[in-house]
Structure formats: structure tokens, C-alpha cells
Length: 227
Image (cartoon, rainbow, N blue to C red; front, side, top):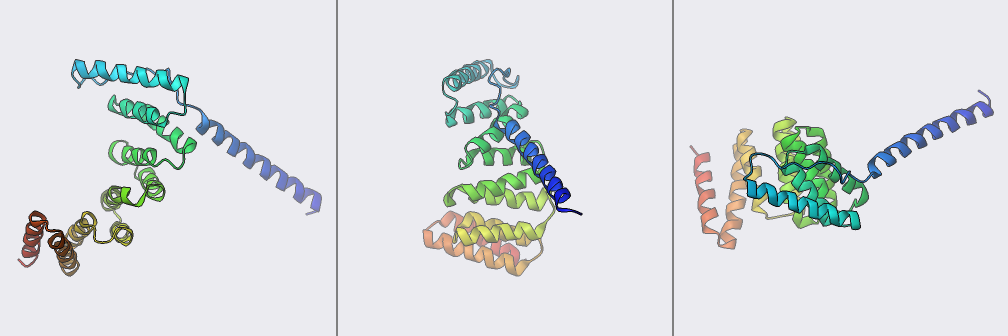
């Protein structure tokens, strides 16, 4: 193959790649449609429905004046989700992840939407991971637990379910909100020794903090393991 043909092929590949990237850029960059209809769900009382309409109209009016208002985009997305307009909420959150990539809330909302509502576990996994990457360390404990539940239930991957909690513990040591789920998980897996170790660790932390209620509950869990 002569050099001219090689250069031609390379040029075509680069051009196609640029066109694809440009198409993706154009699609994601589009601001969500502020004229999209909003209809509150019938399950809410009329007073709540009317209040939701007013809140949405107010958020839209502000966004028309200043589309850089992150808080208003978040508010609008939450109201759309509450009205069962999942596509509308998703559109806003996806737009936000592109426009404000360092803002973690949209990633978490997308992950929860894909995990709990739309049941698209691979997308949920992607956005929980992104949320954990972007969010401050003290914000991500709930995300780790949700990702753990995703691996344990929707993706049927117990090894990853365990690994994600162990990863979380490295970044958030002595956190009973992580240690207890890990103990429960090991008990469910039939790993009694590991469950005992984590329940004991959690109880020691509860004792150190003077949380007698939690300590009592964990003591009962330890007793149950011996039966």
C-alpha cells in the first residue's frame, strides 16, 4: 500500500471520527426544551399539583433569563421526575453532566433513576461511579451503598458487591453505615466468620461513640450468629 493511499485512509478515519464526535457534541449540548409540557401526577392532592405548576413555571422563567442557574435546572428535573416525566428529567440531568461536569448531583440523580425507576443497571453503575469520582468524600457513602445493592441484586455480582464496600471503607474508615451492610452481606453469603468480624468492629465503634442503642442491636446480631 503506497503512502498516498495510507494518508487517504487515515484522513477518512479522522473525518468520520470528527463527524461522530461533532454529532455527539451537538446532541448533548442542546439545552433541554423549556416549553416541554408539565402535568403533575394525578396521585397528588390538587393543592400540591397547583404548587408544583407554579414552581415549574417560576424555574422556567428564571432559566429563560439565565440558563446558568444550576439550582433551577435541578429543581425542574426533580419536578419532572415527580410528574413521572422520566424522559424530561433524564434530559436535564444528562445536559447538566455535560455542561457542569464537576457538579455531582446530576450524576447521582441519573444513577438513581436508572437503578430504581428505569431499571437500566449498567447505566446506573456508570453514573454511580461517576458520582463517587466527582462528589466530596463525605457525600459518597450512600452512593457506595447503592452501587453495592446494584451489584448484589440487579447485576448478581457478589464479588463486586463486596469490593465496592471494601473500597468505600478504605476512604471512609470506621463508618458503621458501611461496616454494617458489609456484615449483613457476608452473613447473607454464608460467611459467618467475616460477618462476626464486621459486626464486632461496628459494635466497638458504637461503644466508642456511646451509641448504646446501636451497640445493643449489634450485640443481638452477634448472638444470632451463634445460633
